[in-house]
Image (cartoon, rainbow, N blue to C red; front, side):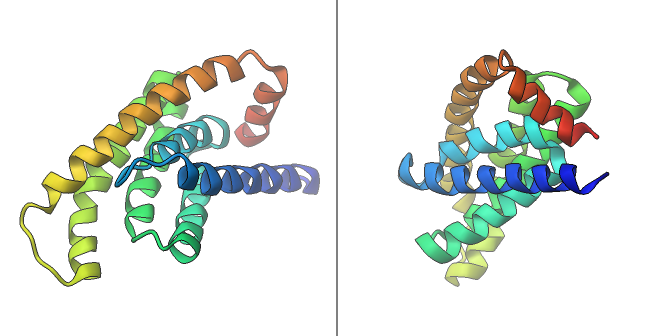
Length: 169
């Protein structure tokens, strides 16, 4: 891989981090971040699982330190980004990426958020999962629907397909 492709990958990941940071902070429902799910699915489709996780991790760290978001910014996003990219790569279509986001963020991320928030808050509630799982699932459903419509239109753009090919190398 030559320096040109590495630079292009870095630039695209940087743009995705910026978009995810801003959009998930602006278009937010209390306790839910559906735009983070949108960006995870788009990143999974464009970047693949590894770079999608990098994008989600960097975005989560930025959101935690700048906007004061709890560690939930990491627990949901990382698993959702990985599974969205992984299932897109091996399933071959947007629906698999949407399912990956649902599975990674909505189920795995919400379950892992329970012990993380117990450590973060110092409070132990057995029913934390009743708080996080519905919110995470709701955000992934809303985000998946939005991402679907965005990606269907993006797939018609030649530049978008070229960007996908950069990450397929």
